[in-house]
Length: 75
Image 1 (cartoon, helix red, strand yellow):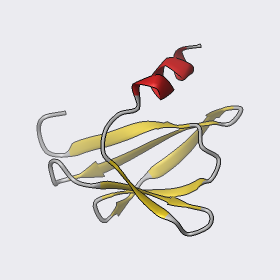
Image 2 (image 1 turned 180 degrees about the horizontal axis):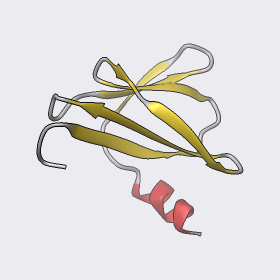
Image 3 (image 1 turned 90 degrees about the vertical axis):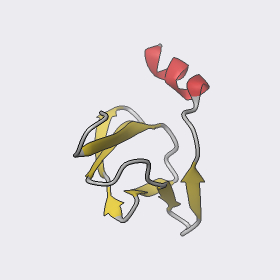
Image 4 (image 1 turned 135 degrees about the horizontal axis):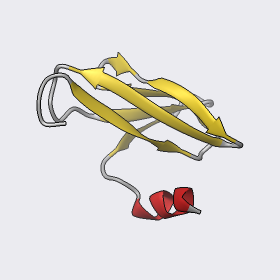
């Protein structure tokens, strides 16, 4: 979306991810099927940093869409 509020979202297939943040906003994580999950967050801020937190406490910034992961979801 290109207007307020902005929606950030994506697919998760990595079971080690326990939390996702879009800026300071915690994302909602929805179990889809099997090990597949989907996340989304709504923010009033455009172009924010998206961060994943793994079960071991490690944090990672998501910089771009993983096109290969998207292909896996289409199967």
